[in-house]
Image (spheres, rainbow, N blue to C red):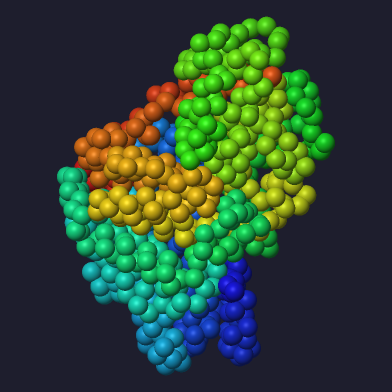
Length: 628
């Protein structure tokens, strides 16, 4: 049974008040002395708990998925975060993270002051110092995966110290420090599970991913020349096996429940970030930009079915799943149930859809799909005469179970008592926005919305200012299995790679096993599996960069450091007719945003710049990253 720690700030405050009560009765009321903070384990933990804000960098939600073809953003912060990456408008003046020195100082204080404390036992000192090293490593890893280089500080600096310190020379040096901290932490961290707090297996799990990233950035900007015998791969395998074989975690059958209130302490979750309603509201969570803003007046004018409660959905939906992404949810083939293929490649699709049929663009019939100005048709089709199938049945039945757990699409299960319809003339489709019926930016661009991460018990509704618990899944067992599969792919061990990628594919996706018999096919299946299993978990962007650095089968046969298809491909949207018998897939500048002209400059974008202002103030932080 897991112990449970909720929002760190609340926990730390309560513990501080309780453990320091006698001190506060006799000493000044406006501060707590340093000696008191480090006098006992309980007091030291109040400082440690508040240092866990470092882990906010590993929260999910739209996060870095906005930089990929998983999400189409519009309006407010969603597009402003995506735009520099879509349009390649980042400059060296931009600061995407380099100065983590305040956080590192807190970690170094933990390590130093705990070691010096006369009131903390030696056994507790080991565990708390290990926790400080874990947090220091995680603070630096967030910088290293972005800019490659860090300013390594492993002591509490004083005014007498040299403060103009150098950055590391390259990513390999950076990762060497991070890996050492994590390995030290694994030795002395306890095995006890407290939700929201590090243990031995949390550190080992993150180390599996750090080692993969470190391997990809060897020799940067030259190719990493991955060798199957590289010690980093063995570290991935050993630490993954430590977690899998002795951690006591298990894969969760209820995939969607891990990301809402129903399974928030699932035995699959290795590290979660937990928020309490006492100081969290909907607008402080990803839910605010997932849920649309709709009412019955607009729905009626669009010809859609009305809501029972017309005020239930009034949030600020500004990021939406793309067809590019959802096409990766495989469907079990009815003619051969041992196969899972793209929904529009199944035998049932091929037998029932005529892609040469004309889909009318004008008129009032329920078979009409208009074409929006500026958009280009990629593919269209219509159910053949006499068939009882619909586009809905072909796209939903026998599909990867994560499809319905992750995507809120046409006529899926009711949420908050309401069912969305996103065909033409539905109650939540993109044409409400195109025609001006829904003149705000808070209606889908893609005919889909996110469901993963949407709590279903927010009372009275998901709306700005409404208090709610919330949590993020930063590390889980499925991710460890996928890291292990990647290590085996890099070692050329096809059998073990497929064995481990099938863990999530079968348990979460409820799909038949991958039948990959070549390394190229195994990489394809693995990359797809990682994408659909870890979407909205702040992973895919960094994985794409890592695979691009590997090159070869990991990046569609291209050499290391070349273009990454996912970061340049045009975005796609699929419209479905009111009768659900026809579809049209298009591309274009959806919502006025250049999603048909996405950019990725491979000469510089594998790392972001160190903000030039830092280098101007301290030349030892230089030189600037290549290309910036």
